[in-house]
Amino acid sequence: MPGGLRLFAETHMYDIVIRNGLLIDGTGKPGVMADIAVENGHIAAIGNLDGAEASRIIDATGMVVAPGIVDAHTHYDPQLTWDPLCDTAALHGVTTLAAGNCGFSIAPCRNDDHEYVAQMFARVEGMDLGSLAHIEWGFETFEEFLASRAGRLGVNLGMYVGHSALRRWVMGDAAFERPATDDELASIVALFESAMEAGALGLSSSHAPTHLDLADRPVPSRLASLDELRALADAQGRFTRGTVAYAPESAVEGIDANDRELLIEIAGRANAPVITQGLGGRSKVDAPSATWMQSRDFLERSVELGAPVYSLLMTRPLNGPFTLRDGTTRYEGVPLWNQLMVASAEEKNRLLIDDAHRSLLRAAIDEPNRDPAKGSTLPPPLWESMRVSQTFDDSTARFAGRTITDIADELGKHPADVMFDIAVADDLNTVFHWSNETPAWRELLKDVQRHTQMIVGVSDGGAHLDRDDGQEWPSHFLSTWWRTEQVWTLEEAIAQITSVPASILGLQDRGRLAIGLPADIYIFDPERIGPGSCRQETDEVTGAARFRAVPTGAIATLVNGVVVVENGTPTRELPGVVVRPS
Image 1 (cartoon, helix red, strand yellow):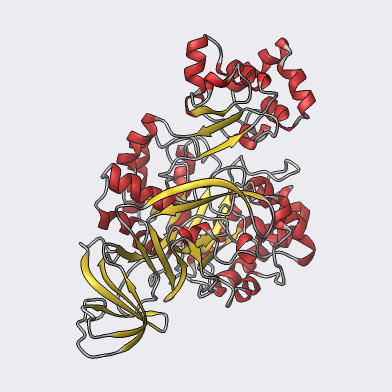
Image 2: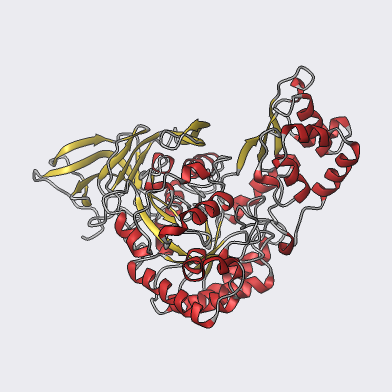
């Protein structure tokens, strides 16, 4: 029975047999106690395999044996050229990831344009510019990039082709200055079609006003007209496969009515689902909130019209530390604060003890920029979710571990004054820790994540070295929303992070455990699975500071039948392949 249980009494030599685990196949069906055999990278048998022999036996007694996890939104395409396992992703059970999101892909890229691409990734995705110097190029076109990954991947890679990359290839510097001419648009569409023929997941694009490069120029996709976006969607529609990943202009503030209609139009033209973000809430700051009911109606209407729209949902709070001495990018949407963050330490101290400038800073943080024409609209961290993580002066020690809002209420001060006073007393070395988690955020997510058009698995992995980028989301999801909050049964939770994103992306042979499918397998301890420790470390290849999360309860990750992580230790094997939608 293809895909079903098969009983084996005869002796057979497999590559690997995983015995005695609770097998949860990713479809949502109840788990069963069964063995699973792997041969030639695929699942060869499932059931009672007592009589079977194997080159290696893995005892999974007391463990869950699940499909490998599928991450639908990452920026790992630069990193995987020097880190083919994408390190922490595989530690947390990810076996397949989608890269090239937000309109930014490492290919196509001309040989003389590496510097531009690197600085764009550095600004928009918070990557270390020095680390990006480690990109192993040797390719220009999208097709060449995919071909260059053969034998050099630890996990499976699905790649979007970025709209900004397409425009830059065709238009050069004009890409971030103006819309395309008719001839340029024809070349952009032809370049996109060649990427689709090579197996791209689809188009990724962005008009989000937070997307600027290091010179404060809008990224190329933001200069594209809506007609250009429509032409690319029409081109994808001729392939009838994949998805479109698109962040409209209003994504940061909660997608407005015009952009909702645009999303439905793009899905219809592309004959493919559209994956967006920021639906109903300020993107990357809070959950869909006051407008969730309206957003839910919109999602369901898109399905009724045959143009389905899905929304990414981070079910794990964003967070990260910073000091005023080193600065942070989290205040780019408040220009006066951003100027403070990039100033010298001496200048910062001077400005912070100047009462007149303090007054300007207080007013600015209460009215962040909402106009894309004036620069980034990135929302600043919420005061109620920012705490004092570490202090360095006796006068500030009592504030450690408390939120800025709590301290401000006690002292009767504006939160900005609290933050600045503590920092000045600590010679700007106070470690502040921001997060987007609030009690309301947590409560609402219990409902929002259960909507069938919300994709709960999204890490932004590979980006944002200045903070914890969400790389441990699978472990957090299982420990928080299954085990603690009991929003899902275990079988439902596993389906949400395996077969559901795989199906939406069009990767029909991933995200499930069935005979004949590739053996992407994650083994974990259901009693102990959790995000574990997350701390800043020095990357062994690039030398840059980065956050690295090591889970608890993760036993092994197999990609195409090969163990790539065992008990938290990478094996250095490279069995990953490029995956293509069908």
